[in-house]
Image 1 (spheres, rainbow, N blue to C red):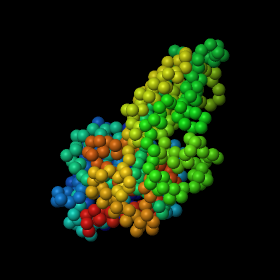
Image 2 (tube, rainbow, N blue to C red):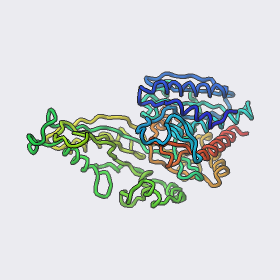
Image 3 (cartoon, helix red, strand yellow):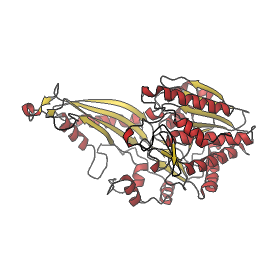
Image 4 (cartoon, helix red, strand yellow):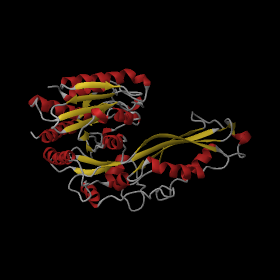
Length: 456
């Protein structure tokens, strides 16, 4: 039996950054590492090309009558920048204080290895385990899963499972398991404003034309009200109110506003009236500025009026908002507010549809819910309670995993999301880490869930 911690170290050493071609060797190394690991389990492995990074499909298939679980993960990671802020080398895993540090440890290499280890242990004790298993591991999640939907459409015949099981969401503390039941969608775009045909001397020409930076500031300021709501007509019209059981589950989480503010490093919250910060990040849509540029950015002063200024924006969407429904509304409002004296260009980037799945035995559980999906939810509830010492919580999360809506649309499959990373794991930031105690409990939980599905 392999040691999951040693395997995770080996996996993290492959610098599999999907966004940067300089890390091509790391991407190939991660693919080969997983291929070898799946072959150790006795899986038939196919590495299926896409327009960019391939998808790994590893299958362990027996009788057609057996339940069939698809386990999803991704082998790509975020860039390690800024390197100066790392306390340990990002691609040389280091264990200290009950954690393993390194890029990808929590997102998503550690959580994926949780499920691989659970399968390995089950098959070691019962090689004839009556459970069909397909691993699907992509290499573009960190850049929006841009080719994953095409892969799904082309390979539907390979993915005839009952539901998807994955761990790419979070938990609040090391002793509280969360089953994620919803994720927000995404609409990402960039606005570029152009004024003069080239940069100008601000003394010679200032005061006679609209400065693109000023225009950008005025435009951005118009997109929110003073109380934090998005100031676009109809923006909240499609928002579906959370069910009472969702609010009750969130209340059970016992989240503390003072601790959250301290974690964020802020003195006060800025949320729409009537919503706690914990409700706002789960149940409300947003419009956020992710980066602005224009003019001189170097040391000292350069007296210049820039020719161009730009802002990167992402909108997080909630049911029943979809990128298609919201895009025209948002772009129309933004174009109508373009200040005179500049021209506007909007560049669309990636998008994701919000996703929600209702656990069994709730007032709004769909009547046609898959029996295998319901069985997995109930098994996870039981295993989570036994392993973690308290019942799991069923919560939405504020982030986006666009591939879930694609899985639902193309394959008709819902997902069971077992959260495993913590706020302090620093996803997408320097000093990313994975809690080894959470990893151990995750392996035991996954093993019990998969055994229950197999009926052993």
